[in-house]
Length: 437
Ligand code: HEM
Image (tube, rainbow, N blue to C red; front, side, top):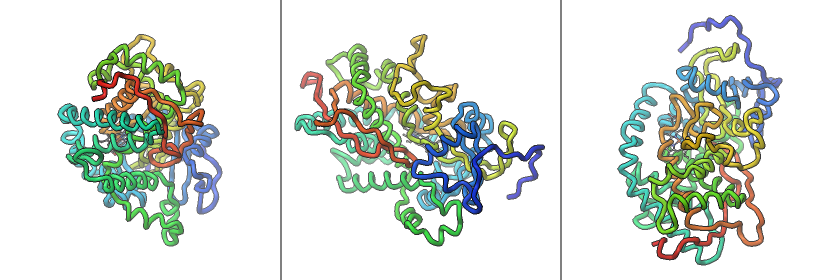
């Protein structure tokens, strides 16, 4: 469809770095595109224009610009680009998260909101979530008795996947009644691969001739890996939990404060319940701080403009790809101090009110996005993250594996951005034995 000529008087594009012929700015994006895009925002921002091969793109790490794109001009930017990964991985863009704006996306989104992820349905699965939380504690308790480090990626991945698949598919992958370790391992592998490929800035998306060559076999791989978006729900919660555990174990002071809070709200004679989670304000600050430093969607899922528009007086053409850099938003030195320090206290509300995790009117943290494409699974995601952390910190003391003095927090880029190496840590039970059973 051709859009009528824009009424904008000026056709000035937002500022951006100089471009090469054919490639444009593509070669300026390396293995860590979120960091490269952040540097460009520092230099040319708050709104930066890039030409990626034959595709127009904009990026920002600025709260006001993000609010304008996701809320002010929600109807213009609610679409998704048809990247090769999206086409191959999500049934030809048929999946809700990757579908372009249109009747098919609206239908699927309505099913999500009105059937799969309603508050009523969320409440009706609380017993299953309680079983999974108990399974998590018992699994770690059994492993802790060997004194060996526990692979928290595996444990947290299983917890997330079981909760999500029980709610969405009525199927449990790990533990009693599961489909067997092999199927679970395969599903986990597919999930990680899916997110790596989805996050890739794949040259074939920007330079049509690259598709002919496909030297790294990326396009072939994408076709093999196609799998449902259950992955989105599982991986985001598990990655967030792993980062939170890593940062807390690295900062023993934070662990002590979390434990003091849970002991005073819950005591030491019973397990944490979902109804306790609203009262654990310091733990909620820990989750917010985790989202600031390690948002599970560092560039969200790319949005795309449906028609030409203007932002801050600059012309934005139709079909411009939008990279909202939430990773750089959380480390934007104009709005946060000591950006590389994990300091949950910074979120403590002066008036003592409940710490909000899923949204904030100031747009300084945006873990679940905003506007039409915002995450419909946020209430479930927040519950899973808080519950796993509350149980694991209440029930156990945590230290780095023997011989290691700290926790490595190197990240690896992907659509969700996990720790480069799985988190290993030693757990020591801190409650009386009978509490665990
Ligand atoms: C900590 C957990 C989670 C985080 C951090 C998270 C984050 C996100 C983000 C950043 C987006 C992209 C929004 C955008 O592009 O503007 C998204 C989309 C989405 N999420 Fe989540 N999510 C989480 C858990 C879940 C869960 C548990 C479910 C479902 C059970 C879910 C289902 C979806 C779906 C279906 C979309 C696509 C929405 C659309 O395009 O219309 N997410 N999520």
